[in-house]
Length: 363
Image (cartoon, rainbow, N blue to C red; front, side, top):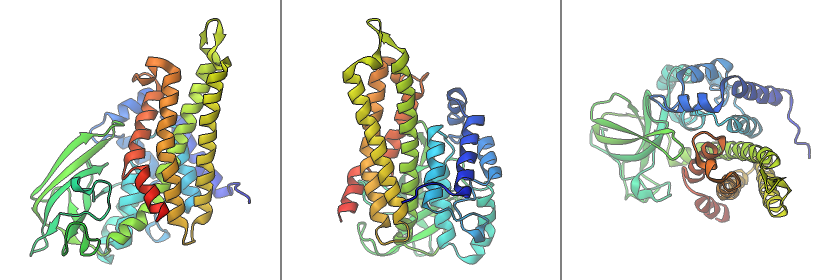
């Protein structure tokens, strides 16, 4: 089977790699991450100018309707540079979900600014009692369509223009039926937004809704799950890009750092451990390829779950190993290693962990 990229995919890969090369190093990344919204508005505008924000959206919305191959290619390249701009949460999840479920009049008002990076949406779905489940919703819809409840974790939710909120119209908290999607303006009365930092330093928010006015969208939890498949593929691709960068940086270090007058990389025990991590990266790539070639088949979602079930724990283990090879400085803020490992931790736990993905894969 031929896994070579076509001309358009090579162009997207080169575009993403050039974006990283021209605009990212550890010092600049630290500045971007420390911004009011957890990323750089200038870099977000540049991504829009390059077309990478619009690209995952449909042709009708001005995008390229990227398939699994292109999405994996772009996010592996961005992962290698530890890019902090929230393309996955704000575009792959929220913008694509809005495009899928919004009525025509709302879509006409929102989709062009979303595609151009002038507006951002975030999905407010997770609640504290969910414990990794995707159907637990206690947020309720009132008699006049107002929403009351709490959303505990909304990644990339700071500074957005609106939230897509899942809320229950009927049924008990654990039922999949009876849940609808609503658009809530970021400045809506009764909405309290509390920002906080995740383990990787990115900015998330929690929402407290007290009779908040909302616009009912179409769609159900099935649409959230459907959009989540490609987003999960993007997260795993990003993790593989980070894993490769951590591995390459550590390999260079082991070739130059000496102990007892000889390079650390010459010790057989270390070589064996590095080979094991190299094999983990290659196995992850093979599972990514399997997921890519499954797109369009009934097995696609399962293949993506299988990919995530492997990459989530394997990426954290690789991060542990690379940190140990560097010693105590591996966890400092001055080295790429610690930053990459923190991002892998976040990717491995959100929106659920590898065990939950394995349960879905095993059906």
